[in-house]
Amino acid sequence: MMEKVKDRYVYNLHGREKVKNDVNIDNGELLKVISRSGVTTILYTLRKSPQRFSQLIFSTKLNPGILNRHLKALMKFNLVTKSDNSYVLTSKGEKVVSIIDQIIKLSKS
Image (cartoon, rainbow, N blue to C red; front, side):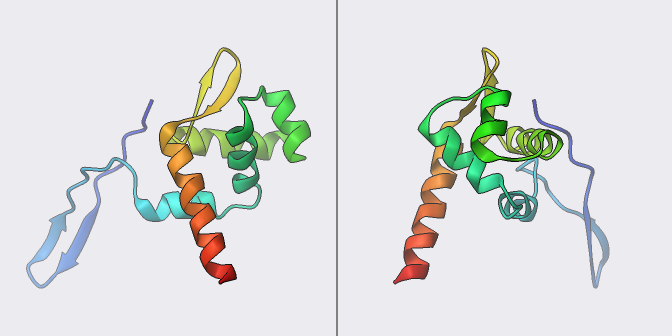
C-alpha cells in the first residue's frame, strides 16, 4: 500500500509549476531511508531468509520501535513486504541490496 505524496512545486522564472510525480515517492527520500543506521542490516538479514518481527529484533539487535519504523519505511518503498507474519525482501529490495554490494565493492577498489 503506497501513501499518496503531496503535490510538489518548483519555482522558476515563470512562477510556480507543479512537479509531475510519476514515481509516488521521492528518490532522495529512499536514499535517506537506506542510509539510516540499521536499515542495511535489516536488508541483508532478510536477504538470507524471511523473518518474523521477533527474529529480526534478535538478528539485527535493533530496538523494537526503531525496527518497526524502518520496516514501515522499507514497505513504503516496496523493498520489503509482509507475508504470513514474516517480513520478506521483494525483488526490488534484492536489486537495492545488489546495488549496495556494488557500491561497497567500488569503495574498496
